Amino acid sequence: MLAITDFASDLSLCSQALALGMAAALGRFWLRSRSAIWLASFAGALGAMAANILVDGQGAFLLLVYVPVVYFVAVIGRRDLGGPGTA
Image (cartoon, rainbow, N blue to C red; front, side, top):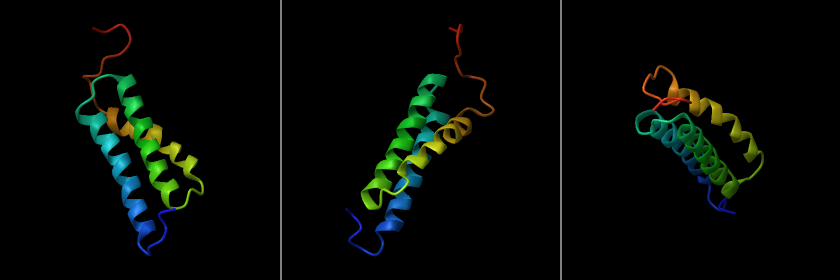
């Protein structure tokens, strides 16, 4: 357990936000396919779960709620995404 210091919970929160923010930025500005953005969203949520588990672990699976949130942040308003049947 990483929770041996007083600021471990603050560090965990920053790490969770960083993992989700990086996934959203990666999906928004770099990835061009919907499936790759879904994959990045899951990777960001798993990174946030790992940061939570290192400190506490209670309810880490609830961070999976942010997968569709990260996805929609990354795709809203974009017209350059390849969908099924597009080349």
